[in-house]
Image (cartoon, rainbow, N blue to C red; front, side, top):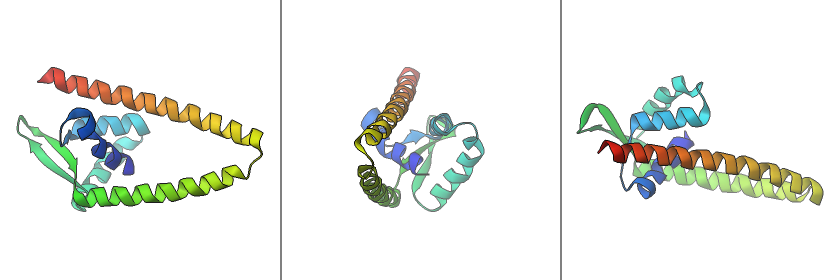
Length: 137
């Protein structure tokens, strides 16, 4: 859930758009979390929309398509999630500092490798989506 909210928060900075096509959002979430998330996407999307965390509006250029954006309520939820993540990070850091230096370096190296791979994949996918959108105009 929070991945969808994080992405919708970041969209305006990358695309200069206030909303994002639902179909593209679905593809990104499935790509990020795997095919098993296909069934969960629509359920999660409906929950977020029904609770007012996201707003969906019909695309004027294609009435079958919908554009999605984060609402104020969704932004508040995302800020709460961020605060919880910060608390989790502080707890993880405290536990990490209890490890011997050599073990800490192994754990940090491993986490760094995973984070870089995920970030690179996310940037490539976002760039590809933005490029396709520019090409379709």
